[in-house]
Length: 286
Image (cartoon, rainbow, N blue to C red; front, side, top):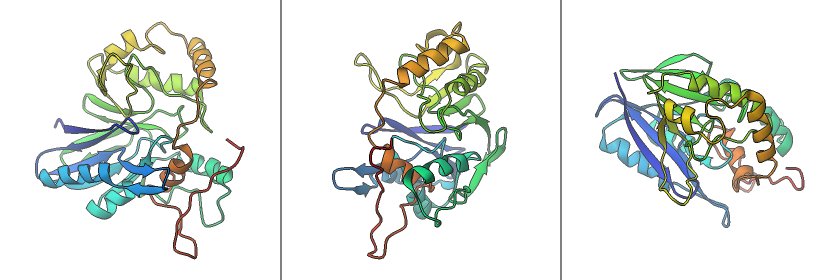
């Protein structure tokens, strides 16, 4: 059964979230939902998440899954908020403990933070299949951007996360802790090995000035036109390009708050004795 897919574009973080469902009144999954964050005030908001909720209510859908492609560095996840409002299981790739261990050390989290992935309801393995109502979905491990990146395949559609961008934007960076440009190349080749007509849905778009935001292309288009990894680019050429390019990039604006939420499955850090939750900001470390 082919899914119905509804995309939601956040203009602030340039993130695309998705609701995938089998039929009106049926079952759905949410992919990469956004929690709005005002860094000046340190305030979280639910504008984007509430748009998803309104759509799900309008379609009379039952949420089975809230799916993360990885622990994002460029936006906060609203997975926990959505679970509290709608139900469903929060899931991510099974290598998330490696990311949690790295950032536990960076943020000097205490013993209360156990980096074993228990913050999520389910950890997906490479090749694992699961159901969204009448739809069958499959997990594809695509590490490289981070060690825990996964993509979700439903029939001829693949939600690629941050592994690929639109062809005129290129590919994801690989210089975050645990990232690996050579592994990213191998992961992208797994996606580009699918049939040419396979639909690829992005998690972000950072469009050039000559076009509006877009988030869907085909394997054939990526092979022909991706500015970083089109057909004919060798692994060594890609690694050299990616490494040199990453060295020039600034860290994402929301990296430090976002990762503290996202490695916890969208939950805020534990409140301190005064009842307030705080983000930690390491000085001169990143």
